[in-house]
Length: 153
Image (cartoon, rainbow, N blue to C red; front, side, top):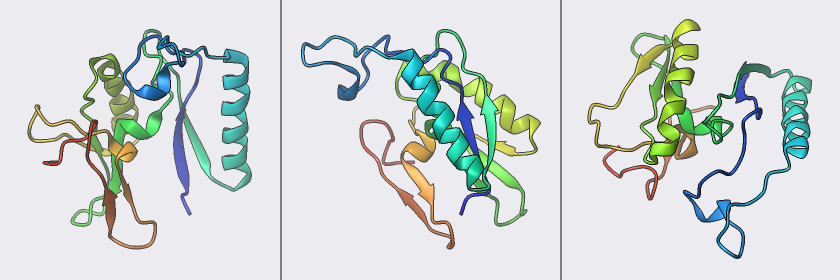
């Protein structure tokens, strides 16, 4: 069971561009977002986590970054087995539209005691817990690669 999660407020969530097939309607136009419903759903998820005893860390969404709400993609948090310190491997987003999200999240992790790590090759793409996740009870990482994360990662 997770002890804490991070959520980004949906205050700027919208579909302003298309970077995957789920963002468009059958005519190829960006899907419409019901902002009232999105806020209510976000609050419901947050409340559910809290009712389960999970601490919810909240980062404010930022203007011009409508996908920031998808916070699993920002990095891969872990406990460094050598130092025992909480750490995070920050994402390198493939889509330029999402790259501006990373500094806000990186700042939060640095201010909250995490050792911030980066990929050694700036040409590799990696979307954090969107494509890799730790087994909750073992030292195993389940990871995938494809259109968002390079196999080299």
